Length: 512
Ligand code: GLU
Image (cartoon, rainbow, N blue to C red):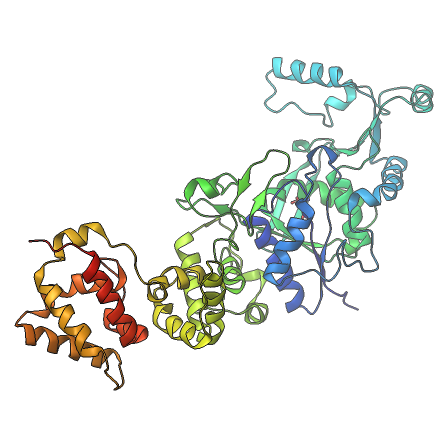
């Protein structure tokens, strides 16, 4: 009988969730849905020194924003709880003791000074990476080297100890990765990692394996940075007697900086002018702030689509996928091995596509809300007309109001450079004539009519319209450049156009 697919996203609450972490969550989600399985979230908070308040809420809010919430999590527990490792603390020791009993782990009593001395000794002997391993352990103070009664007495007296895994000296550790194929590591390169710390907390390695087993995880999909730990994890499954149900591994490729030089780091974001976090983050301990995709105006579905393509592709030329379509098309086999460059232009492109695909009536809501925030009231109908006009020029929803504001609020100031170069007697004559001709006009004032009436005014004054157009734009919008002016005239209507012309005529000084 095949097991139900269960995958987990297992972040540590040490700060804001980096975009790479969000991608890991997304791939886990897509795989679970594709396989008709479950997506879990487990908080890995065994390292109390690195705990940052607010980080867990941040993770939750980010996933909720994207609509990829887990089915089992600390805030929505299933039958495998608790879902925070700190709350599972009493569960781990028994497994560490089992490992000691079957000879695959041992107590180590070395003090920090003794560990330092060991490293110094090995460094002096030109050992490249000094570590507590199958050779070093024979010279240290642990239950493999000390007499049994001394070990017993140390434990009874409450001496500080850690529990370490006993890595075999000469063994080929093989593991299969769904993305990379077979990976082989020789055990002599591995160190005797600590499994239980002296404070009674498990380390990441032990807790991760115990929890994946108890939570019936079938596939571990995580970042490439965990690949070096995977051989150790395979040994733990073996030594705990869980090899038959060991999850399959898939280690995701790194996200690289936009120039391809190195890993995209948390610090790159605001430095390079784009976010690397899903939502805004204010670190309560350092006071540092970082901007998020949500607050920069990205739509969640556009961001998800962009994220899915950072390392995966459907194998054809299609690029636009809804979350449901991603689920349908997703497969681990189509995840690449090599790192993927982060490309913010592509993120913007996705946002533009999703923005344009939205109906004018839906987008009108953003215009109405943004305008209301500036105490400007706009009716739905007008907002929709504005949206229809500005949509193709907008990347973010905030652009809709920012770029169209001038159509609602009459200019009270004018671009100085354009004014000083273009506001001559010719446009003044054309505009004076035009204001008169549209006052009382009762026909349909669309872009074509607005334009032909303007041409008629120019002809009546014996002036070439083309030469005055920038000044006309200045009078109506206050700016020297902008979108199709005749469309603007039509949206504003005759009354508003006439009143703006009058204000400009009364305010601007004629040059030349
Ligand atoms: N807690 C680890 C992290 O923060 C999880 C690694 C894993 O998925 O095994 O990335």
